[in-house]
Length: 133
Image (cartoon, rainbow, N blue to C red; front, side):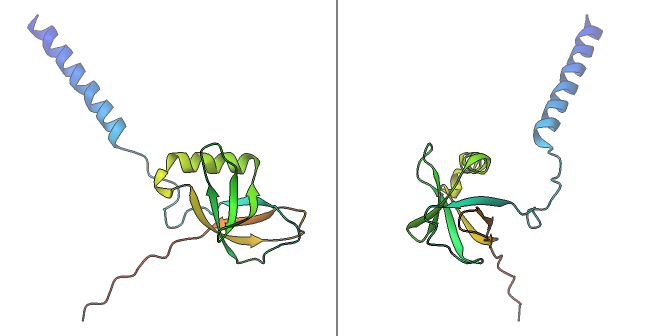
């Protein structure tokens, strides 16, 4: 009985170690957060007579959980995100509530007003270390 109890205790301990290692040790990501792959989102103009040039900074915003995803210039909606890109953004906002359902983007590609234009996420600038004098 003593040997059996020792064997079960060892197996239980090994199992607990494996569970702890699985939960706490995560694989390293393929891309560094600084060098993350660029994601572009296709957007559709709400009014084809008002087209903005490439390089314009906009904000992707979702008012509520079931609301459409709007592309805002200041407080005015100029476009919307549809389809698979909208589902991806809804999932992103759901997984990261600290984003508060908004994302800063910049226009990268504009062609015809009747065709979608593309935006990418604006990278936040990191503050450099101050030189010690």
